[in-house]
Structures are given as C-alpha cells and as structure tokens.
Image (cartoon, rainbow, N blue to C red; front, side, top):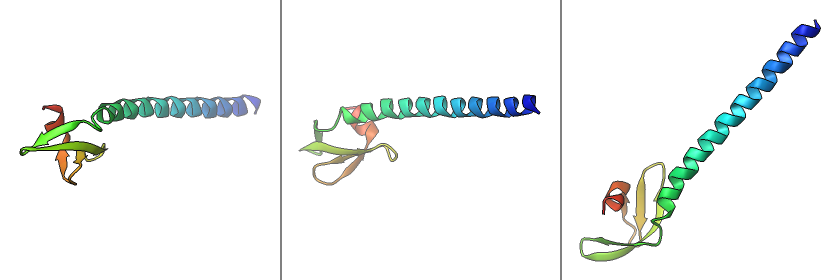
Length: 80
C-alpha cells in the first residue's frame, strides 16, 4: 500500500514538473517572437510615397498597424 502511494505521489510530482518546464519553454518562444515585432514599433515606414509610423503589431495575424490605420503583412516590414 505504501509503495502504491509513493508511486502515485512520484508520478504527480513528475507530471507537475513536466508541465512546468513545458510552460516555461513555450513562454520563452513566445517572448522571443514578440521581441522581434516590438523592435519595429515606432519606426518609420514608406508605403506608396507616404511616410508612416508603425504603431502596433498582431503576433497572431502577423501584421503591423500603421499610423494611418492600415494593417500590412509583417513580411512587407521585415523585407524592407
């Protein structure tokens, strides 16, 4: 009976540790990706002869929002 309780307790601790490290790993990847986008906020961008400022980004949609309200694909900003 004691061995069974210890085994269950060990599995519970192991599961919690696995979930914790998985969460830390995912958080680190998301943070790294966000930093790539945050660097561009406030920079000037020329679009169709207009000089605009990058004011926001959407990590999920991979778009940047410009000062005139337009949203452009991130590849347009990064390839410029």
